[in-house]
Structure formats: structure tokens, C-alpha cells
Length: 108
Image 1: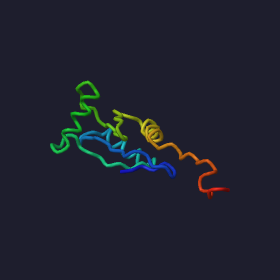
Image 2: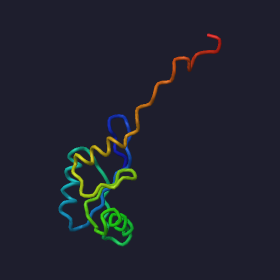
Image 3: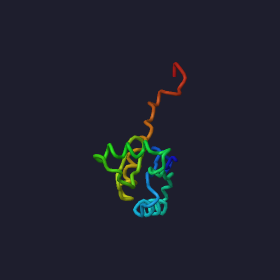
Image 4: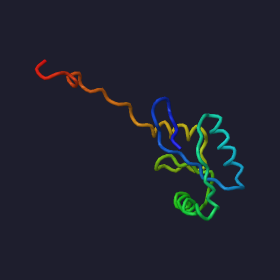
């Protein structure tokens, strides 16, 4: 899912979770209350095992959830404020204005 910040588009966001994780459900609920919707992937399911290995690499061998991926950044057990900040940082910079001579006819 792509999260919008005003008119700017930020990086895709995914929440990694497990069925039994109460902290994961609470974070997802609080993010939704803040207007941030994201798909949730259960890393205990076989088809998503590669996500669990990635989290283990980041945490020194632990499968800590919730983990939130924003673009190529992985936040482990983040707060809503940390997710919001990471989304804001992932937004592209505003476009720069072209010099005024662009768009004028030659010889003017």
C-alpha cells in the first residue's frame, strides 16, 4: 500500500506480525486511527518465512514483531510516532522550480 502525506506519496508500508502478537494488533489499530493503513503479513506462515529471516538478520537472530517496513527501511517494534516520522522522511522532496526562461519562445 502507498501512504499519502498531503499530496506527496511516501514509500510502501507493510506490517509484519504473528497471529498471537497482541502488540502487533495494537500497533495496527493505532496506525489505522492515525490514518495509516498497511497490509499485515504473518511471518509464521510458511509462504512468508523469508520475511521472518530478514527480521532475524536485523535483530541478531530474534523474530521480533511487530516490524514495519517502509520502503527499504525496517523498523522493529516501533511506536506510531516512529512510523509516522519514517513515512514523512520517505516522502519525495518537493519539485524544484525551473528557471523562468523555460517555456519561453526563442528570441524573446
